[in-house]
Structure formats: C-alpha cells, structure tokens
Image (cartoon, rainbow, N blue to C red; front, side, top):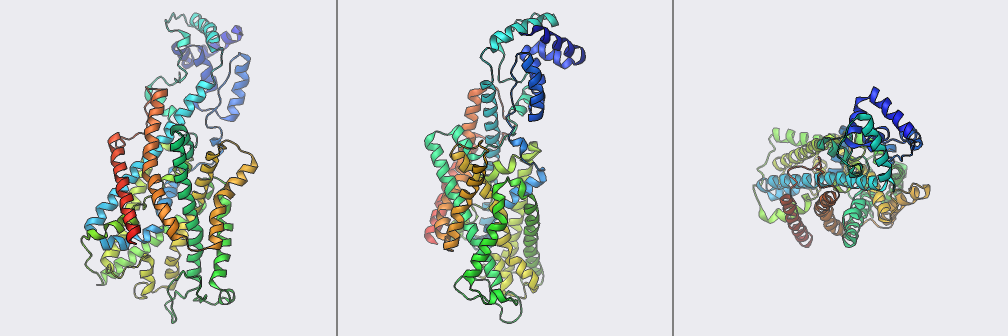
Length: 567
C-alpha cells in the first residue's frame, strides 16, 4: 500500500507543518490526506486535479467539491444583493397601496404593513435556512458516497504507521472515523459553518424534491409554475401596454392633454410629433413594443441573474428617484397648504387593504438564484433587515404623504395618475413622463429574475439540474418565456385570470412553502447529523413562529378571497 511513500509524506509534514501532525494524532490517516485534498473544505477544479495526482500514487481517492458548478457562476457583493432583493420586492403593487391605506385609515394600515413586513422577513430567513440545510444534506450524502469500499482495511494499515510515527497509543479505532466530521474543524461552531455554507445553488424545486414526498413535490411545482407563469404573463402584457399609454397620449401640460389609457382600441395621439405613431394604431404599437421588450430582456433568461447586474443598478436608481419625486411633490403640496385630514380607521376597507398589500414584500420565489452568488453570506440576515427596513420606510412615506396630501376619494388606483391629473401638482412635462414610466421600469427589472427562477425550477422538475448540454441551456429559457409571450401577443386581458391564480399560488410561495421547507430541512439534517446546528437559523424562527405564519396564511387567503368576490 505504498507505506514508504506515506511514511515520507508524514515525516515531511511533521517537520514543516505542526498542524498536519496534530490532525494525524486526533483523527488518523484520513485526516492527513484530507489536509492535502480539502484545503479549508473547498475543492476548486484546478487545485483538485493537482492534489488528485499526488494522492492517487498513495492509493487514496480524493473527494471533489460540492460547489464545482457554482464556482463558475458570477458573484457579487452584499450591496448588490441588497439592490436585487429590494428591486424584486417593490413592484407595481406599491402604486396601488396609497389608495388602500388612505381608505382603510392610518390606525389600521400602519400596523398591517408592519405585520406584513415581519412575516415576510421570517419566511425569507426560512428560505435561507432551508438553502443552507439543503447544502449540508448534499455535502454529507456526497461525502458518504465518496468513501471507497476498502476504506476500513486501508485506514487500519495507515493508522498503525501513524501511531508508530507519533508515538501515540490512542485507544480510538480507525474504523470509528466519522465521515461527516471534518478533522480540520474540531470545534463544532467552525464545523457547522463549513457544513452549512451556501456554496451550491439549490432552487426551491430541488429542495422540494429533497425534503417533500411525491404529493408535496407535485403541489409545490403546481403552485410555483402557476404563479411564475402568471407573473411573466402579466409582465409581458403590462409593460407594452404602459409604454403604449405613454407614447399614444399627450401627457404634457399643454392643450389637448390626455391621461394614460391602456385601451388598445383607441387611436394613438402622442404628445409629440412622430410620423410612425400618428399613422399607427395602438395595437400595432403594442406589438412593436412587445417585440422590443422581448428583444432587450429576453437574452437575460439564458444567463444567471448576476448578468443583470447593470440593469438592476440602473433601474434601482431610477425607481428610488421616482419614489422620492412623488414623496417630495406631496410634501411640497402639503407645505403649500393643500393638506387634508386622513381617515383614522375604516374596518370595512381592511379586506381590500389586505388584498392589495399582502404581496408587497414578495421575493421568496427567487431567493436561491439571488443569494447564492453573494460573496458575504454571513451578512445575509443584516442584508434582509436593511432591505425590509428600507422598503417599509418608503412604503410608509409614500402612503402617509398621499394620505395627508390627497383626499382618499380622489386618490387614483395607480398613484402616479394623481401627479398627471393636475399640472399644479406636477408642472414639469419631463417629470410627468418619468413618473408615467415607473411601472415599466419596475416590471422590466423583475422580468429577467423571475424568468431565470422559472427556468431553473423547470430544469429541476424534469431532473436536469446538472445537465449542461447546450440544447437544454437553450430549450428551458424558451419554455419559460414562450407561453407568456405567446399569450401577450394574442391577448392583452389577463389580469382577472392571472390575478386570481396568482393570489392563491402567491400565498403558498410566500408563506406555506418556506415554512414547510425549513421544517423538513431541519428534520433531514438532524437525521443525518444530530450534532449539527445551522448557523443561519434565527431565534425568531421557532416552531411557534411557524404556526403563527400558517395561521396568518389562512387569514391572508380569507381576505384575498373576500376581496376578489367583493371586487
């Protein structure tokens, strides 16, 4: 068994590296070669090949990295991750919240938004814990599968040589080596950090297959596919329609001003000179814009979300400028004496408020794709705290300034219209067009992320997560984008159908699935390694909290159902 070579390696390590000798004394021969083959628990392809050549000569097999595929993906900072998550949270639903908040009253609306924020934060951190648990399960299982059949006989011979070299007569049997333990991480905290490191992207669909039974997995995919396809269909219709309403209406403060109208049967009457727009129908312009929309954003579906970094940064800047513009304009109007007394509380308006605001912090479906490339995963909790605090603050400022600036009976369903109805509120033509484009920018930012999420989960559904052949890299993005684009081309009226299916599927994704995933992830990890403790588990995410979230889900579904019926 090449004992001479092994003895030479051990003596050399002992003379030059005390750490190696210590590992050999505590964990036997496997720890010696683990030090050569698994530096700090991460095997990169280049280093793996070099170390493998060394260890094959000694008759030992080297393990490969669990995150080999993910090492090829791009990475970004925690600040970029913060921007990605906040962009995904703040959708066009933010523009419908001022009316709902002002109608229900501030005494009801403010606590409701805070509760929504807290529960969404809990389920987001549940997803993070489930992701780290799934990584731990895969690492443990992969390590056990890599153990050679003759490890017992080989380790006995090698361990006897190590005992002779170190002069130690430990009673520990070489066969008691725990394949789940990393010999270079004797402290449990360090070992847990390595074991639960999110080094490999595990989509929600992959976690469902790992932790759920067949029925649970089927329900998950039904919920996920319905929601994501519905979202993409709405985006594919809403973005071109909003662009048409901007191009084919006169939004200036000059004579013949018209308000944005999404009716594609009306003639196109732009507020500026354009031969093409003036002689084209709105539906023709709609199809042209749809083609441009897919041509610009469609290619992002073939890559990872890290490739959309520039798009996310630019649209995030524009988005927050839009928010600040509406908040500042409202404050200026209030300061000029146009304030009103807001409604304190109206319980009859609570179902509508709940139905509008329940998904105002939705981002759980795309977290695996967004969080895995982040380089500083120890700061994920802080990032989420920052995201939720910032988004909640902007929601509050937007809704409170609207409630004190406009009478609740005059606030429009889409809040930006309040700044387009009256030139005294916003007299700048450029700013009026800028605010009218807010929904376009918001939806355009989220479209690539949701497409990538759906693409990855479709791959997981058919069991081709690791198949990197070109044909699948082309087919699955097309499968993700194709149906919504086809629907958007032939019809522009999907809001009712997709709104209903998206509401219920959205409740499952935002609340039920994260709770179920983290519950079964904890059970799976405990079954494989009872001593392992997930460092991503927060004290707030107790079993009691999970029960409260499920009760909240039933309440959410009840209010959403009532809102659909009443609407």
